[in-house]
Length: 353
Image (cartoon, rainbow, N blue to C red; front, top):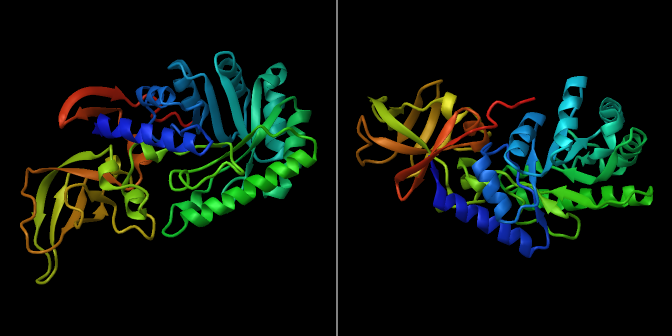
């Protein structure tokens, strides 16, 4: 269920906060995958959207979004190149690159259409996933130019901000990495027009001394990870899963009460970082913990002497990682004041290529 009033408040608040810092906002749509939400973000002032795949870009371009950044080091086959060519005819398209081989392959596959696609060189700012070191961006950019591509700038993902105590440090490392990378490219003769950073934990910490835009995604909904990290409050949670108590269990003599919900890993997702206190949270019972997930079962430990919810009671579950939960459902219920007002199709669900 998506509470549309909270959703709209989250969208407006992030747009206003980012604008006040002199930054552009390019939200990551892999979180919600829903055109109706994308158009709300654009209406609130987003310059465009970030996506993870060509398939996601196709969905949002078809919905009318005209500026899309595929923040991923694509390896482009002939078929993918044709899809990118078609996309570039209806929207402004940028793609991430993090190797000379990838840049060369992208430009070669696009052929005469290479000049219609921009690239941003991905920089590793401490997450140690994809991306080159900031001082190693020039060979990648030079390969892109030789392949006929336009180099617009650099980007990074401070994914290590998703841990207790890390957002401030990750934001600082992001700033250093973007600054060094852009200075390195400028010294090599490149005009750097875009320096893209930011995640939901760091977006409010990113300044315009290094970045020109941020790409948060989870902020539209919030989730249990952001709640536990202190990056949102319970009243900011826009998406919950409606689940029913289907079973009660007694535990060993002095153990906590337990009950089972009909929402397992096939709707909540199974993500649980080592620091998280459970596999999700109950919106109305913050001290309860989801201690185990099966495909269709969530095991909840109930604290204290108060009576646990009864079999048949419906509860609101906050997923740990909302991006995974959204990729597991075909549609969502849109509610206002507890009443159903609409249903939205998760149009980019499963668009993983």
